Length: 124
Image (cartoon, rainbow, N blue to C red):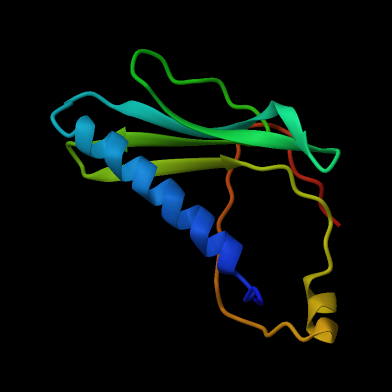
């Protein structure tokens, strides 16, 4: 069995989307803005001696959760039909062009990252 490039990413996005849809559907009658947070915490178990993480997707209703590196916060506004995302992922300098030497193919996908945490990103 071989794994295709992007297969794991697509499966993670599909699972997260399903969980997010369930939260939004359960709260579809809310008139006030609420937040959905996606984050990971270290697990108590390891796999082959390597530490593991447990991903959490939770709604917050009263107060906006504070921003932390490694956290994605979505402000859900049912009145406008929008979710405004703040992405606070740690970023390491990475030479994406070097992947082409390993057979990767260039694409036109675009990810916009925003953060309110000063200095959360390392730039080259």
